[in-house]
Image (tube, rainbow, N blue to C red):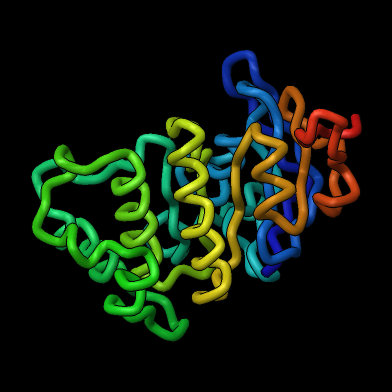
Length: 234
């Protein structure tokens, strides 16, 4: 998987996003503080925003090219997106929410088996429940399943652990690792947690005020302190 941002410029309120960057590892983190532009980058890739100028390509195929008037609609990008609020349909059961992902299956990629997906994420017993009866970790797993069942070319995760306390984070991370191992779908992962970057991601782009200030292997850019926590070297 390769995502290229060439001369991408977007003015959004106080934020000015400027990107010249290629991401070509299996799991890449977008790391930085709130307001750095991380979610905006995901929205540009997903087709939920259009830059003022520039080119965005996925595996060499333009998703957006402002100069040539190219903009592939979000529904045709075959990209899975799990936003921070998860966006589960409150009036649909877990089974129906997951099934919505299957309806969006337009990819030429091999289809993801619903049975295998539910087994890997351990959500078989939740099928007939409603979203408002689920715990935070259960909602997270259902949202992952819905996105993955569409067999996306790329999975976008926007701070999937941000709303969870540490015990829940410790329970959810193994599911993310199973997704990585079982389904071989490239992931663009937004976070402000250095620990998540080091634990889960191969590659990291560090964003500050809409600009990429560092890019490289996670192990090279983040160090473990004497207190056994990770931090960016910059």
